[in-house]
Length: 87
Image 1 (cartoon, rainbow, N blue to C red):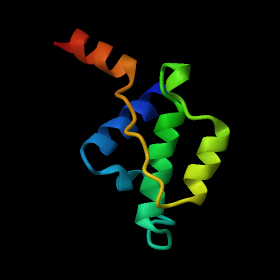
Image 2 (image 1 turned 180 degrees about the vertical axis):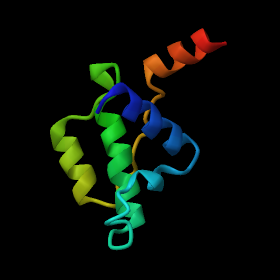
Image 3 (image 1 turned 90 degrees about the horizontal axis):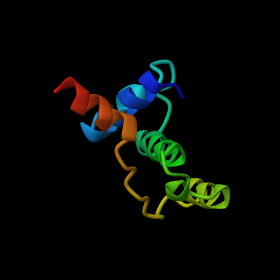
Image 4 (image 1 turned 90 degrees about the vertical axis):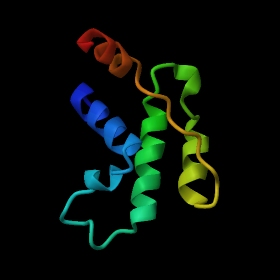
């Protein structure tokens, strides 16, 4: 995931529009709940601090168990830095 994609993903998740990230060719055939869960897990895996990232065993568990509560990903560090610079 590059910088632009991470910023876009974070912004859409924060605004409750992360479903917009799902490719239009599959959006009608996939479960929106599963897609949003995968997006959230993906953001957890790219946290700036390695200690904040889940272990792969935890990722597999989260993907296999839909009822498992997920942590909320932290705002990307570069995002807050760029926002501060823009002001």
